[in-house]
Amino acid sequence: MNEHLRSTAVEREPAPPTPWGAADEIATYLAPRSLDAALEALRAGPVTILAGGTDLMPQSKTGRARFHPTLMNIRRIPELQGIGEASGMVRFGALATMTDLLENALVRSRFNALWQACDCFASDQLRNVATIGGNICNASPAGDTLVPLLVFDAHVVLASKADGTLATRTVPLRDFLVGPGRTSRRPDELLTAVEVPLPNERFVSAFYKAGARPALDISAISIGVGANPAAGALNDARIAFGAVAPTAIRAPRTEATLEGRLVAETIEPALKAADDEISPISDVRASAWYRRELIRNVLRGMLENVGQC
Ligand SMILES: Cc1cc2nc3c(=O)[nH]c(=O)nc-3n(C[C@H](O)[C@H](O)[C@H](O)COP(=O)(O)OP(=O)(O)OC[C@H]3O[C@@H](n4cnc5c(N)ncnc54)[C@H](O)[C@@H]3O)c2cc1C
Image 1 (cartoon, rainbow, N blue to C red):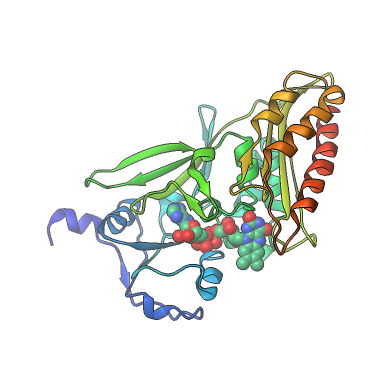
Image 2: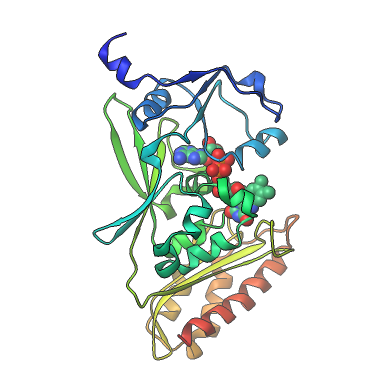
């Protein structure tokens, strides 16, 4: 083995027993211990990436996801771990779990909407394994961290070794999400981190999710609101919605109606703009009509609350 291959070799293990009924599709199971090794594997051929598995495994069981011949467990890669801040930019490693986010002091104090989204996410067991990278790459219109991350102007960091050397690119989350279950990630890329500018100390934010039951439910709608409030007016107003469009979305026209103006005077135009910006569908979780009613009524309450801060 030459030096290059030695340094990038990945650990090969027998494919694990799979209770989800698709084992025959997997020829190779990889569990790399470095980013470099993972990127070499992605470069070599079609790979299914496994993080917490809380989307991938149920989807493979129902036939919504099919495995490539290589399944790569990324959970042993140290470069994908951790949450930290440097020079006003907060980095969430792709493997940060919902529990990691909930227990992080910076998230608790400065990213309230994200903390609230994690707090109402699934159950303790799911929160312990579900990762932020998986939530983003799954690209569900109802993905709960997507809404606050859009409010906080998050960018995703993607790494690859397309021509043999490490390359990274940073993409705004709003451009990364391109449709239900679809992102602009290339097959040879790994999402390594999410970067978010640290909001100023006066920035307030909130997240609300409505579903048929308070726990272990996918959102029928979700809303994220953020702003610098001053004497009843909102500056730097940011609004995002989940489960009412093909992807989680920011709502720039709703934000424009609110910007720098008294909430009490702009609430009706804001609700009208929001109704124009969303395009909900009817499905098993809610009708389009009910989703519009939820957005209107929940957004009103959230804006009134933020206006009083
Ligand atoms: C019972 C139940 C309840 C749930 N409740 C909620 C909820 O309340 N809110 C919510 O938003 N979601 C919920 N989910 C969905 C799921 O838990 C989340 O989307 C979770 O964050 C996915 O993360 P994961 O690490 O398990 O991803 P995985 O299932 O491992 O992967 C998801 C997808 O992303 C890809 N992927 C993962 N990591 C990377 C990476 N670093 N780079 C590139 N691609 C990657 C995988 O290949 C796969 O396509 C629930 C799921 C279940 C089963």
